[in-house]
Length: 366
Ligand code: NAD
Image (tube, rainbow, N blue to C red; front, side):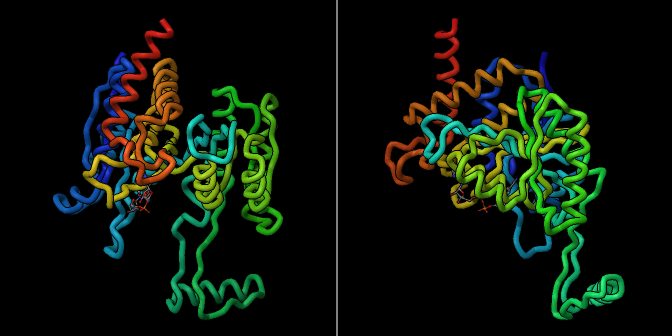
């Protein structure tokens, strides 16, 4: 069986890591029908839009996208293509696994967490009021009238918006993910002791949903305590579910626990579509140099294979990546003891090594 997948190379170093990832995915033996789509800086210059409608239409057809990073131009009033994609396809769950592999430069062993971040609301809903505007004044008046608190006139306001619907579906997603992937515990992260209504609602909803999953353990943690716990004993945690802002911060913290952005994969999943992409950005200063690590995107490919039901291929690719990391020979600069290590290899050589390793492991495993 072949799988139709929308392939978006992105820009900066995106095309190099996408090509390396496409090669290793094809080497698993799974057949793909790639619907190659362009988005990013070049598309903006040629077509006047960073994210053409064709890209969205393609993912609506295939249901699955594999995406390289896309640069967000600064100071030109252009909205992030990544945020637009998530909004247009209602990709409400951002999944970021954080797993230690032997050979990665990390202070920890046995970390194996899945961060499930709500992707659509919270302080990231984009509801903001600029200082000195009539809208901001109106909001200040409303706040004074309804709460008795008069906020400083010289201030800006961002709305923290948390709904039952979105909280429910993200927590349900976390439990379903735990169940489908043999995980034992879900931890909801919040600050409900201070934000009693918004985070309180998230937490109360999480407790309600947890009752529907008696086979999975449930606990909650206050976000500041969670940060300390993750630094002290990350091996105790399994699936974490968080509102948007805490999810953003904790997932980067977790990427740091396991050896950095070069190996941190991600997925954005909705009820109909899914887009897989590395956590890192386009690292434009290294564009065209065959230098950056393609493994974060390759691990995103592992997540995609699992999503497509290709579990064996996913395991083969993950094992090959783990073996190449453990050997430490054919890895990029970021996985070497020092970034200027002359034995570091380039992006495409990593793909060669992973493909070779998949062949070797296939022979060993008969
Ligand atoms: P970045 O992740 O692109 O790069 C930060 C630094 O991390 C790089 O200078 C490099 O040292 C290191 N790095 C990143 N990826 C690496 C890799 N694969 N291998 C080795 N080292 C790697 O972050 P940034 O500089 O803040 O962002 C650059 C652009 O990417 C911005 O326009 C940003 O908006 C965009 N961005 C896009 C996405 C996305 O497409 N999903 C995500 C984050 C940032």
